[in-house]
Picture 1 (cartoon, helix red, strand yellow):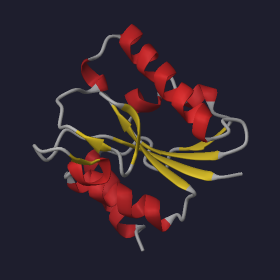
Picture 2: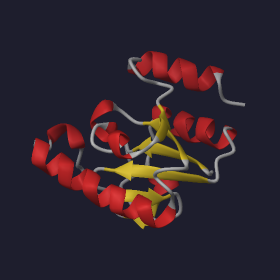
Picture 3: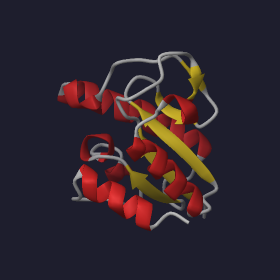
Picture 4: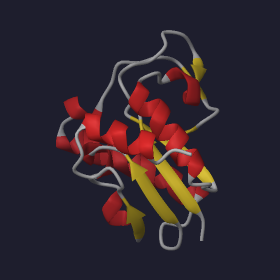
Length: 137
């Protein structure tokens, strides 16, 4: 059973082509990445509104897209694409998934994953940052 962390993308990005781990520059993303690394997972992926499932070293262009502005059907189609990619790199029945992602990014994914946790569930941005800072080694 592998431990896999899924971090959602953020709006604050560099404006040049970069590795996914470097393009997102908000404090929330940076601390989420540090926290996820402290968990010693086998894999860390980014949930991108535009690109779907990203490896940390995938090179991507900056973009302005969020699930918050998508219609329900678009969100379902996005989630289906992400799930298809996840099935290629993980076991949705046996692996443990830790979501560091908001409700819209989890909504249509989590019901297809047997073992998941959401440590930041119900916390506002300020409390999420506080949790991540306090729990990052």
